[in-house]
Amino acid sequence: MGNLGPTELIIIAVVIILLFGAKKLPDMARSLGKSAKIFKAETKGLRDQDADDAPVQQQPVQPPVQQLPPAQPQVQQQPQVAPPIEQTTQNKAAGN
Image: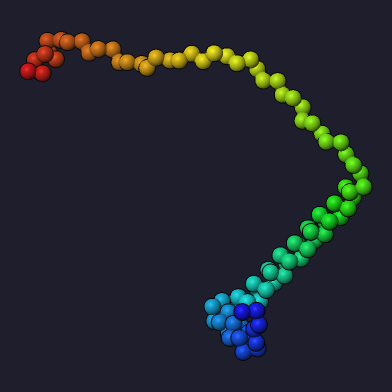
């Protein structure tokens, strides 16, 4: 699968042109080039940063200990129940 001949490459190029259209290919290539340029600059910056940090050996920094407020007991609330409906003469007459 590793060896692609010129015929296979031409077929792949034709399929790509048919799928994406000739008008969009230059824009896609331009954006891909910009992305590669940004990626290259970022990786170079990381390598330079690693080279600057390598000679200096730093002691591990321990994060400050945060003091939490004392735990307060949680009061469980009883479920609230609606008061009972008062029976009046109208309610009794409507129920029958």
